[in-house]
Image (cartoon, rainbow, N blue to C red; front, side, top):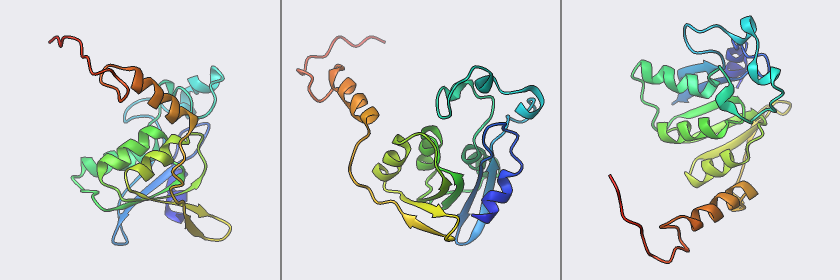
Length: 181
């Protein structure tokens, strides 16, 4: 986790400095920090649109010019052809839902994070995908496993209810409309 903290110091985000380190067999595979995509101006230089608009943390991430630390670590591994299957990721903060989906799809099997992030569905997704999820306590210097309690957030329940209303949803009457191409 100390390496993830060190990597986070490269961040160019005005709101949150995030670092991520992907490891397999105690060997560092890739690192990432949050900042603007390659070749684009950094928020440190031109400001933060989300902050200027008063958008709270964890909301409307599509308006953020930066890529997240976890995202950049996974992209770095892909750029160098480094497989991530079975690896672990250490993050200074809990991954957002988008980064969580990237972590799952990349084959990472264990997530250790220190700071919180306002997106409860990300932990639900990690558990549903069978990942080991641990919260690192910086004062104590060790991580504790977050067990899957099986509870669903209201957001997940709302999404499930909406899904059931769609054609083909679980409570659908079975009739499907014509398919068009």
